[in-house]
Image (cartoon, rainbow, N blue to C red; front, side):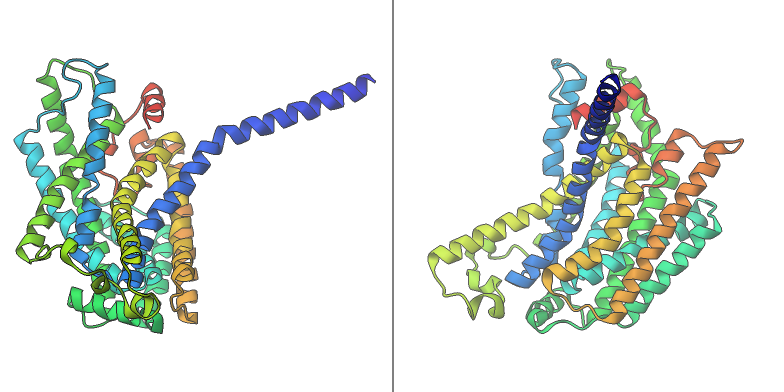
Length: 433
């Protein structure tokens, strides 16, 4: 009887341990799923707008992507208020210095160029091909970091980059043909972007990935330390000497750079006449592909109204997905580690190509399958090699700081996201998220 009771108690303990393990990671699992949805959802919603509505205004899409500051502003006010315990100045954002303004404007210029190149190529290329080519940012980041920052990389990392280049290069040299159902949408997107063919759009996507990596390296090399020093100088001149949390700094950096980039893009849109007439005065039929709408759906006020609502919700999700993706990325790094995020990012790069192709029925020939699998193997090898190199550096006589260990794995992190955190600050950020 005693032996039977011991077995029952052991079974209960095992079940309780299993339950506690599941409950301790459920929020991380939800965050990873949400990252997949928001990261792939941004591309998917653009292709939905393109394929279903023949919506190919790349400049408006770029504006919507940079409009994430609209969500960042209330978050910044809320976080500042929490840190100041609801004080009299809790609802105000800190005053920006002239040097901070210069840095934000320089970064905004780079972001605007990257956004234009990305949206132009995204509207023309199939979503799966665009997602695959965007993976070259890993290659560009390594090359530029080696040339500018003089960083060293293992032979495994170099091999991973070569595998990625071969996989993506094979597809770019012979891109898949446009399916018949997407032909009209692609033609209209080419006309709007002034692109002659898919190869030119692929080159623009490659250039966008290069510019994005170049901006990240320049920020890492020069702007990060300048911005941090300027922030500390401004903080020393105020009555409140409390150092803001990591989430506050990261959110405000993204908010200001997105805001100035938005202003630059909206000025470009006004000059080029993108808002002439406005969407509100445009018939819905002009925003629909004939094979998706006109030929199959009778024109009616109720149907047109429903389609307009769907269009507006889709455009809104473009902005929301960009903001949520950045916030979730930050949360995963703090909740677990940048190592976890790097693994999630590698999985998203590989699976995203197949998910987008299946979702929209895009052409996926054998060359695309082979190139995607080869690039995916390169992403996996690069992640593994980076983790191994990090562990070797940690165990060496001159170990990396927590800053280098945790955040070297996350590509394109804003410079204000590289401050070291204490355990109390990490717990506080998790509660704030």
